[in-house]
Amino acid sequence: MSITREPPNPFRQATFLLSVNHLRQLPPDSGLEVAFAGRSNAGKSSALNLITDNSALARVSKTPGRTQMINYFAVDEALRLVDLPGYGYAKVPEEVKRHWQQILEQYLRTRASLQGLVIVMDCRHPLKEYDRQMLEWCRHRGIKVHVLLTKSDKLSRGAAGNTLQEVRAILKNEFPHATAQLFSSLNGTGAVEARQLIATWLGMESGEQK
Ligand code: GDP
Image 1 (cartoon, rainbow, N blue to C red):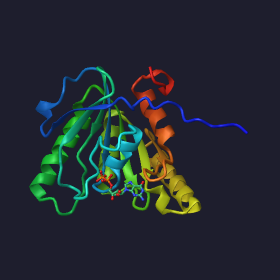
Image 2 (image 1 turned 30 degrees about the vertical axis):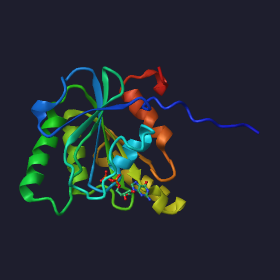
Image 3 (image 1 turned 180 degrees about the vertical axis):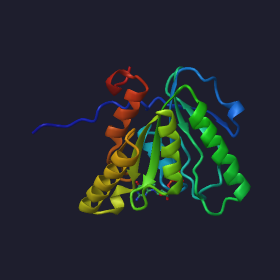
């Protein structure tokens, strides 16, 4: 009987760097970074916690939309993960929404060190209006996008597979710079695959720990 081992997690060393709520406070635009975006409550904090194997890294919020900051995590001195503020939460006042819309757009349009954007979507409600907006901004600048269809544990295997095929078909048609996979922070589905892709984007050798 063979024992299958997970590859080492290249993001286990990630540590909190800083939180900002204005672009002028961002760390210097050098090195490489991968950012995470998603509708509030889609499961972005849980996904970041699983990808880094650190259950306390990105706080899993019980009050979506409340903590709106850009959170930076250092993988090493030149590589970073970025937790962008969740969008689409109905109870956030209009002017706060506008503030973050502008910041997200500016960030995606101008950040030179940004290698790719991970968009977290609840697999039961994929490709909502703001998700498409993110995809559009990234397409505009040629930034790679990877969609994590999270909470896949909430669907049967067949239904999850169908959703994945449907989302991939739409992306291929409308946003060919984007890829997608199933993900579950609850049972670990897709964590290895997601880590490998992000590590490749960050130029880490074959996704393995240095
Ligand atoms: P965020 O607002 O996008 O950062 O979402 P959170 O990570 O805070 O998750 C929102 C809610 O969904 C929380 O109650 C999580 O426990 C739950 N959740 C997140 N990911 C999963 C998942 O993969 N499966 C299940 N069943 N629940 C999840």
